[in-house]
Image 1 (tube, helix red, strand yellow):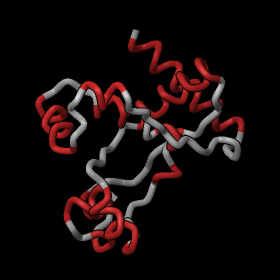
Image 2 (tube, helix red, strand yellow):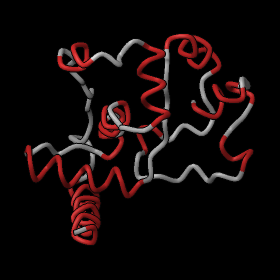
Image 3 (cartoon, rainbow, N blue to C red):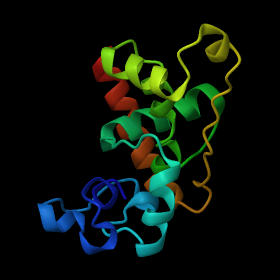
Image 4 (tube, rainbow, N blue to C red):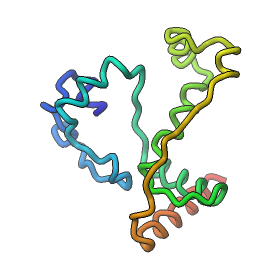
Length: 143
């Protein structure tokens, strides 16, 4: 989606066209070529889009389970870092917040961040356990 929107090519370009293999633990998001319809509809509605590393998703998977008991699939956690990026204290993010009208402390104090996290119940237990253990190991290595 990001590639199609960024280039304006939408479904006329795929990640494989620029050397990305489209292999990820976030299989629910592994769409190498965006929909011809969706990209064009969503472009004017989005003010930001980002990518994540698999390691980030796996660490979040372990955190979600350990802290909240949520057994999610990696792709269900892709929205979590977005709220942190929006609040990041950097010139880029400060400018973006000002541009979209989110720079007021009052607005920020009254904002609710929602991450729609679905998925995980159909992931085979052995696959989920392997991803969970990889996430735990990543978290341990960051300490």
